[in-house]
Image (cartoon, rainbow, N blue to C red; front, side, top):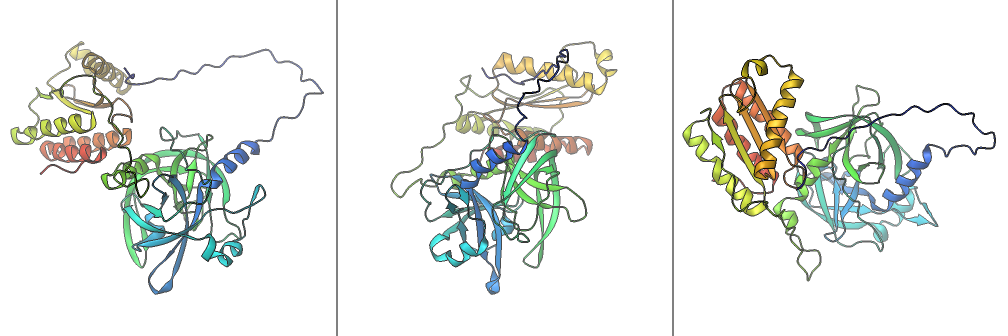
Length: 416
């Protein structure tokens, strides 16, 4: 069974300093890693054109992320409300990319590939373009298994309007990954965005929007959102978790991979038990009507997606000295409830989400068994929603919101 939480322990060892041989070759320049990533990511990165009302041309960047369905990922604010857009893949002169804009504009009829805007996530500022054809040999960009960590090296490609070149490379470091709400102007109106984002120290410019942010393996971890105009070396990228939610929408999954063959549906993880696990409101925190709606949602998640969704409330922890637990530090409580959740997950072979709400001491713990069963980012949003409802003593409203969020995270419609 997949472990509930993976902890990585790192150790450093000290060795006696040795004199450096004079004939020792100089180490490879640090830029070599960037060159390798650039060459890997370049063939999947595109220049996006969308014509707005009045013949106004907006340009941005994007990534081919599904070759079978011919899907290019970009920002919603790059394409706006138009129905069609045009993308340009990089042309090569030998092994080098042709970076001059005029080369592509002069050959737009030949090099520009039209496509339909077939899905958008306005809140997360994402859009999918289904292009009419693919250039020969164009590879899709792989998605990373998880979001990056602070301090991690990242690389982005884009087509900044102020630059005379296309497919411009920018390195950076992740500063933080967090949920954010922000406003931006789009076609003379203000739009509110809300998504999990990656903040980096890499500079971005208009035209980079929609382009890929990748890790050292050339795997997509984010989508360029833009730079802060009132800060230095601070740029935002829409996090990988939001991209995966968009790709898991039923309308996207239902797209054919060719004119003749339907896509093979992605099979849900095989459940480790025969029937859904029942939740228990032992602390009586929720009203009967509100609690009654939980189990049908859990049943549907289990039946259609192979995902467990379990909430247990308790008057006090089932083990441990209560008075001692009340005096624990925040870290000690976190460890205590983590062990409590881990034991239950292992005992009942839970694959998905397990939530504990303790009345005394007051504590909320939301645990997941990984993105294969339930998106970690969605579990984090569920935790924030529950925390808010508990603080405001709106338990029933919080539970209703959480159930809708759980269905949405797995690409299921809300239950009526």
